Image (spheres, rainbow, N blue to C red):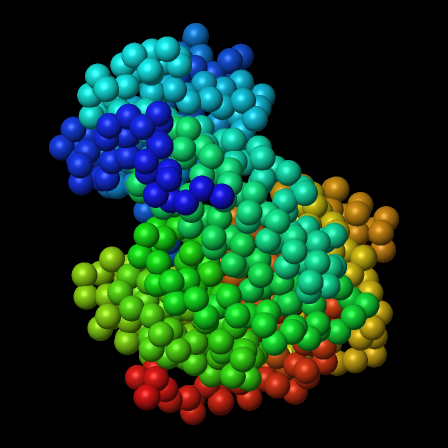
Length: 523
């Protein structure tokens, strides 16, 4: 594998200045905008769009649209504040983009296959080998930068075709079922080929240093994540065996200090995911389980001590969001108060406070929003009528593939807990009544089957903050929320979780009230 300094020396036929930093090109870039022009072959939609997540803690996207004319041509000007990952969107299809101020490129693709046909060229830059050889030293800074960004986006497409869309390089069920040694060999094989691919393209082409660092981090941390989470994932997938005991040296890769402190990787999603997985792993090593009331405060305190700067703020924010979404609002309030003292410039705080507000009503220990819905048999069913029993809520749609896959597991769970103090309430969010009712009748679906008129726009969906299906929720015998994110029906751990939940109403909330503040926990 070529070393990084080899890439710098040989980049794009060794043309002078081919590898440039943001500071070197800032003066010559179009301030604050990336420009995409191009054509769609045989268009089936009259718009093309680029979406960007400005905050890692805000699910809302900033979307820029462009009209496609009768010739299939478009021009899109996207506001950007620096180097950023983005998505090119056409209809239901999506392709990866990497943009920065000064990006100016021609984008072309077939309407029926955006990911597989998209191609990029720099605008106003000589193309072809002979032209590049003749004009390499004559390009302006602006032209050279456009070329670098077109090369970057071409690399993303090529990398996707070579590795992401290739099942042979993905962690799929066949690989998850492997034992430790062959799985590590698979990862070593994959990262070797991915790094060689990057270095080969970097030596032949020209990338900005921002993009090179992004692409390098994507390879490093996607593989680190897969290695770190493999034991957990395998335990979930392989139902015929218990959790695999890893050898002593399996986690030695975590001792590399650069793995946690790679400043050049801060903007990469895989790096951010790795830091969160690392904190979870370290908490588990110290016998703290996700089901423990103090799990998230412990993770918050651990990340506070081990990380610094932006990496610390990002990881603490991820821990906060997890605690919001899993209903741990009492712990979240204390941690969020501490976060306010850290994020003094409010880079991430506004999005986190908004997210916290959305989840307060669905906190563990809160009364579950009541509803009255009509069942498949025409009866009126009220949720509060089941108080005194454990309630497993399943929000689903008869047209959703994941929901349909879980039907068999739902039937098995009902049989397993027949005669026990639990009821399975299935709330369909179907827009159409007849197909739902027919499926319930033909399949003889067990449990309580009701439908919320209006689907995801219904009052029930709004009360429970639903944006997708399937969504599950476990309620205690007193009608309070015991777990807003229980194990899904298809998980073999769902049976154990339900068995452990009987009689636990109110106990978790009482334990939370006794927890120390994040500041004292970190001491």
